[in-house]
Image 1 (cartoon, rainbow, N blue to C red):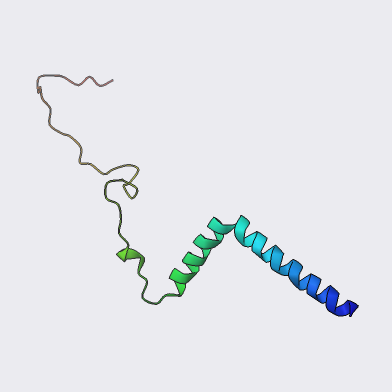
Image 2: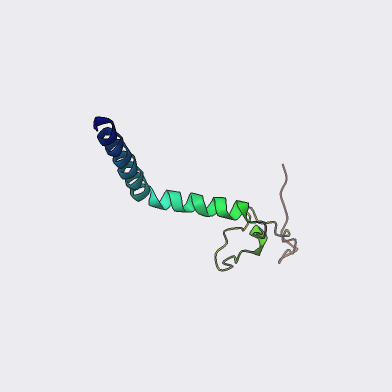
Length: 81
């Protein structure tokens, strides 16, 4: 009878520990599970996600703008040393 009692207590402790970890780490576990679900989904394509175009999250750090070669006053001299 003592073996059954200790087994029940051990199983109850494992279950309560599992529930505690699930509640304490819920946001991290949910995002991890979503990532696993996406990676295992053969129909998932990351290029099909809706991207918020109002924010420049994917904008380059150094934009490649063409140089402004128009000189408003051609009479200004450039001094070189």
